[in-house]
Length: 184
Image (cartoon, rainbow, N blue to C red; front, top):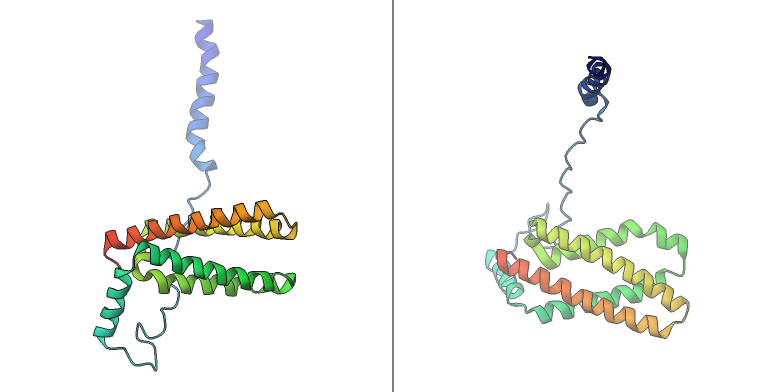
């Protein structure tokens, strides 16, 4: 009997905590809103004051993009990386300008991806892959910046090889997604 009396306050405390627990919980966060798509490439969709290109021109462009091999996609992505690297080296010398231009660089990248991958970006797998790729490339570019500042030839060479592997991996995954879904 004494044991039972000792358990009543404990049971009452547990029940009170279980009842009050939802009151302590934070409200649910709002679901994420879809981000607006970047502006379409010039001439592909109707824009105010611009004529719509003939349908067969877009179809020919889409067919040419779909015929692109994974190697051609990889080569194009590598060329873009090389161009961005050259711009990055020049722009990084002025730290305040580099930080101020961050949003412009991000917007340029989004527009370039929309131009390159088109409707494939609507797929959640493609968005996830591009997030992964951009995170990895940001880290690799930062490692490359540090290696070049320290004049570490071995690390610079190794980082460039890893960048090439990451570009090859990403181009293959994105090409497979585009081919699988039949998107432009």
